[in-house]
Image (cartoon, rainbow, N blue to C red; front, side, top):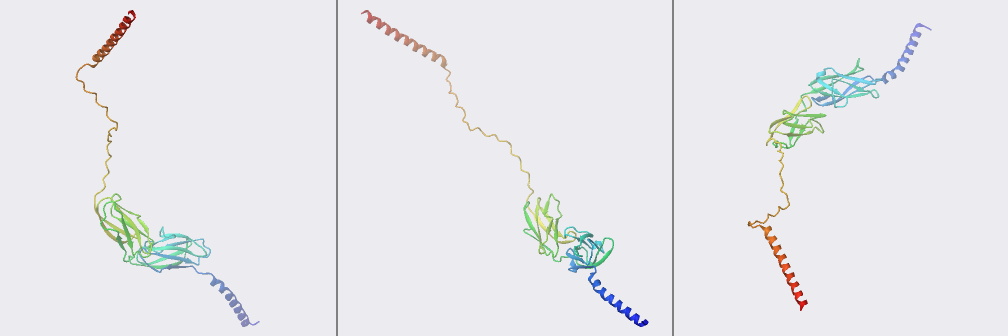
Length: 278
């Protein structure tokens, strides 16, 4: 076989091997990080999906700038790094921006970064957030409904007031956001003007004031024991005496009656005796 024929045959074999290996290479998905939506306002939440993680059981996510945002696996607890389970080569976490700018989100094995994605954080939004009150001039102890609107994609809103817990309270302090709206209840125990604000946990979104009138409730005095008069009738007073001794009179009357009885008996006896003699 000539040299040229050998080179040609070797080239055909190499081409065949490359052709057979190509489908296997394309079947191995490369790790990627996708963020949706790709642009969020400060305080809003985006979904981060890492794919092509192969045989990894867990994926580690981190931020290029830890101060630019936070990550979470459940939309509740946020931190600068999180660990998420991998299912079918895919892991999902959530990002919340705290500073405007372009933020890099990386996924890796815990030691090596294998893919990165970016998300753009804009402004100090949600823009146009407002607070509405069921009444702006309640009385002490009256419950006021607070409604925060235009909160965009926030998962939860945090309410606060500059007053101490002994002066006023907002419950709950953290409320879930539904369709851009969150609600809470304000109650004051002392009169005055209070500031009510709503934040995403870090960034102020809106604030308003409320004036509470009336007086602080005072503890009620404990009533003293009251003596209830008895319902039984009082004994009738003894008849007044004119000073005459009653005992001797009664004794005298009894003596007179005895004497009369004796006299009557003597008379009867005498008459019987006289009748028998005649």
